[in-house]
Image (cartoon, rainbow, N blue to C red; front, side, top):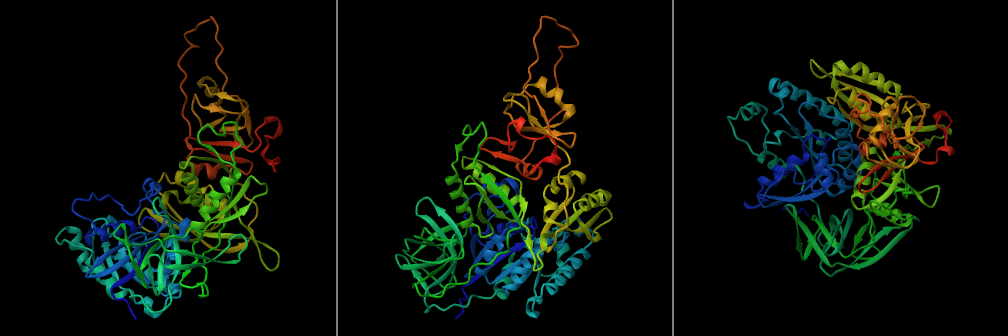
Length: 624
């Protein structure tokens, strides 16, 4: 039977095309908030890091009611590094709203999420968002170009005829209106008409299929997400495929052991049941097939496990996600300042924390390191690693991480194969020459060149993943911050050869102490400094980037000697020309293979793996 009282859908798009803003409008116009409730912008981005960075990191559920029908909506990330969040959530929905920027059109992550949704057989509603941008106001024909490009993408990805017959709405999610008639866009933009999101609500009801369910069958559900409650403990989230479940019912978790790969069966009692009502989790006594629900009472579970009413039930296939392409080393903090800011984490505790993260994120992998104190975390991008590192820092942990390393493969002939990504760049045309040279130096091949306007162009490069490490900040510098950058994994190709990521060496402190302005002033001509006067340093700690290609051991704590001779010219105020503040992402991009990033709740330090100056070479070509 069909449950016509429910629609399950997700919002998918490239990063910064307006998914979360659209969900804000759907929540507000459906009456999900009371009059006395204070509404905040991007209400679905509840994570502190999401609000600080302005991006969606975790897929999150909500629900609204429209004309007596419950719409379960999942807001998904748009950044390629968090593609695993999209992949694991598509199995819980029956359709999707695809957002495309009216100016930028379909971009790499648009292709990625659309390909996954079409493969699931989902019907798609195309929403052309941001039609209020000045480029569209001046020329509405841009919208036709975006629709044509999106349709071509559907065909290229193998969409069925039914999927290609997608309805279209034109929206301004920020102002909370949309329309199915292209001719009405100008009236809404000029203010002659006041619109709402009702056309999108109507399309969801008419175009997204109601779930097919069997309420009489045995209870089955696949876990798509994990959460935690301080009151009831572990929460598991997923869509109920068949049957019903009640509070205090005995059910089974059909899972697997990630260490051995063997199947496991655990029995537990359901302590609480919840469902989404707006942004809240409302406790209920029963959930039925078609619902996206929350179950409490099971502690030893992984994403992809099957919950069933009996132990001999057939489990669902595991959730398959694209394999990781990068590997980063995590290890305990062995620096001289270990334990001053947070918990001096033991290797066992660090391992447990990483395994817990892998349990909640199917896109991450875990491997034992070369020593008992080191562990490898497998992921998709630098931003994904940076978000996890920042989260662990805020939990009060201290640890160190190394440079991300690309994971190579071998083909049938034994040749080394490396991941190749398609990087799409939107930038002012005057910078295209410098940007092209930058990417070609990293083994990038220009695949496409398109004129977006009189002053902006779009470049597409096929470039090795290892060539993208550390390139984002250089790209933004070359384009004076006006360039847009996105990428997606394309395929594996034969190894492209060695390439130099960082040309310059480092300035390394040769002793422990507190830096002085007198010492740093004498070092400015040697390179760019990362630290300010009064900073605690130790031997082997990196304090700046050297102007030459080799490393240099320096003394940043040297005080000015006091004498009884005074001179007007020699005792003036020392003024430093400035330092470079290195963010966590910049540190990940910048470090070399023989260096660590020391992460504590209060500090991010760069250091050499070998601290003692007499035990390491300053010539970079001699390093292992």
